[in-house]
Length: 236
Image (cartoon, rainbow, N blue to C red; front, side, top):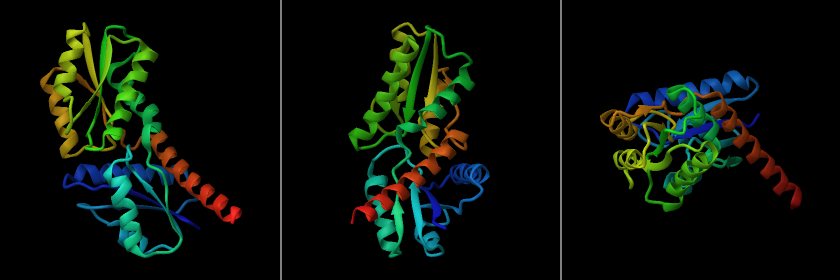
């Protein structure tokens, strides 16, 4: 069987690895026929190359939300250095985690049908502008869908900051402000988001974590990679 290897970046904060492990446990529970492994690029164990050394054919699913440096360089680089034939790299989770993020937001604020609500969609941020643009696109889409007082993207390591976004939403008339975390797991950088929300008196939604729809998306990316590979072989 082709193994599914979910790979996250890794963190010095043990909450991050614990959350990733919990997510992969949900993948196993919901898809018991799969050989599911967990790996990290750095800072946490086991490392991706070590995990790939213990499997045959595998699909590496990046547990990442955007096509930034880790997805474009680190993951394929580590797979290449592992030197294992028969290893495929799937797409990142990407904006398809939107349903889970909305579910976390609804759990934090109650009803999403509140015209006086302002929402900050807060990601870690990247020097790769298209990755940040995805978060901004999500915020704009939510605003059109729900008709809130406003919705803005913000970042822990890029502009605008969470504090600035909350301030602007309140200036536009938002009576309540909530921060939806566009992050997979808690950690040192997501703590910046949480601290900014707390300091500003905003409601903070939980990270995506081990949400069932995220677990199913991991398997969907695995299946897509296998399908593409089969199609490419058939075309030869």
